[in-house]
Structures are given as C-alpha cells and as structure tokens.
Length: 142
Image 1 (cartoon, rainbow, N blue to C red):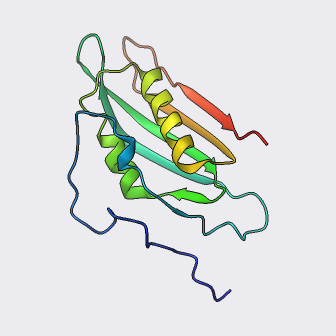
Image 2 (cartoon, one colour; image 1 turned 180 degrees about the horizontal axis):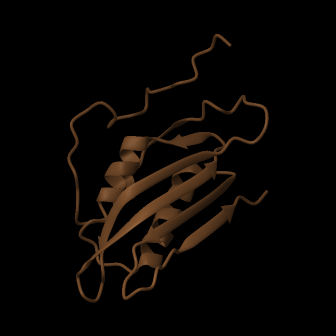
C-alpha cells in the first residue's frame, strides 16, 4: 500500500498550544479526519478510553468523576484525539446528571462523525455506594 492514509489537513488543534474551556460543553471543539481504515477488509472498530472525565452534580455542585469509553465503527470520519480530550475537559464546570453528559456526548459525536455504529458509556465513580454507568448504543439506519 503506497497511498498516504493519514490526512491531517483539516486538523487545527493537534500539535498546537491549547486553550481550555471549562464552562460549556462545546461541540465546536471536536474535530475529525478522513477515515484511514476505510479500505480495510472487515469491520473496523475504534475504541477510545478517557479515564479522567469530570463534571459537577447539578444539585450539590460536587465533582463527579468517570471513565468515558467510546467505541465506534467509522464510515467517512474518525475522531481526532486531542479535540476529544479538550471537549471532555469542557464539561469540568458544568452541572449535569451523568445520563445528561453521556447523552450530550452521543448527540455531538453522531452529528460530527455519522458512524455506522457507536457505543458511548460513562463509568462514573460511586456516589453513596451506587455506581451509575449510562450507556447509549447507536446504529445508523440505512
């Protein structure tokens, strides 16, 4: 295979200084690049694990911590990793329920990537001895 598979021409954050936003979950922070696995035979799956997610409880303002696990089968686009990190950090001072955080991520990623299949799960640390792990599975229609 002699063709270049890594197209970085549309990326604006990778390899540059980062300005972090902590007060709004901003989907404009997310970037994508053309899927270099498109020519692979078989089903491609990308798995991304982010073990340092933080947000705030909407009622108490106490911090919530989670590992965010994303798996998806790309069609035309893949998620750029630094933009994902910056996006996740943008939740830091937002008061939302665990389920709301995962729902927002799901909607933003489907809009950005249009994947064939995707699962996103927030593995939140226990509160009061109870763990909440909201999970959304998506399959593209058609």
